[in-house]
Figure 1 (spheres, rainbow, N blue to C red):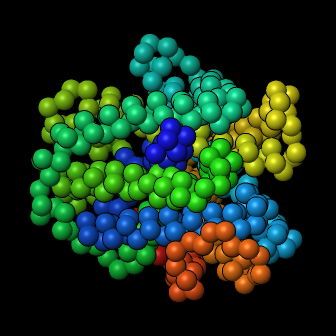
Figure 2 (cartoon, one colour):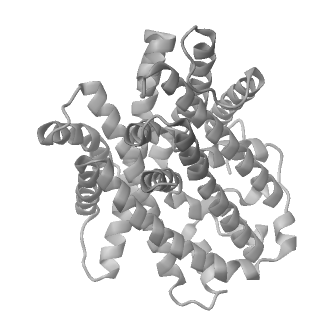
Length: 397
């Protein structure tokens, strides 16, 4: 694996592993151990498969962006749906990450004796990491490698402390009520979202199917491994009832674990992990948004053009973070349905249409009609469950 492939693999993993990873045991506590593990593996396989569907459609048509693919294979209506969902997803996630990142930055500086407002922290966070995106993919690649390495060291150290203390009987807990398994689908599904970065990776890496398969399969498998180990550590250490009694508060969870381990810096290490996880997710998401906006607005790839694209990319989510400083969860809620459309339903539809046409097929993702049908059905189910949870028809985790 060459350095570019490694960098892109870590970019996908870094985009996927957000700060929400730490709270996954809380969100899925009512599901129990076996059900959560089953959902994680199944949804990872779904997202890795649909990533390769998008690669297939791109390589066979020469169109890298979803809105171009939709226009080419589905016509104007497909392009309209794709463009709307892309903007909704990217801007929602960018807004959420600026809101969450500015809060963490303000808290970190306050702990260091420097007090700044949430608004100032939002500006600083956006200028720092948004500036790296404007410089180019290479700068994002190198910065992401550094931050991902630090995240990995922290997580390995923490898991090394926690896993030996896990109790097997805690891991066998079952769902606490009917409908919870379905309600868990959107929560865990959004934890594997990286598809917005696929065009940027393909532009940076090239059109070699073997390399791209490695990047997207291994780049999404790394988060799966960490998610499973973190789930085993938390559930095995605390048990289902203790997790539920935490009330969904991450600070309460970390405090409970901190009382059980002999590492005084545990809380600080976990907060640093959350900071870095949010920053790497922000870089991956906004890199995809930046490249998309540059293509749509036809900005030139020079200093002036990239500055203009940067303003279009970062000003709207920054304004959201300034006017809705506590809008992290609100923004993520808007992103869930858009992700299901973009990451599952659209790739399935595009490949279905592509395989019916007489164009040359340079690459074909594994799986035939049955695999496409199953993936499409899962996408419809996830959207339906998310809408049902929002309307109160299904219980929320």
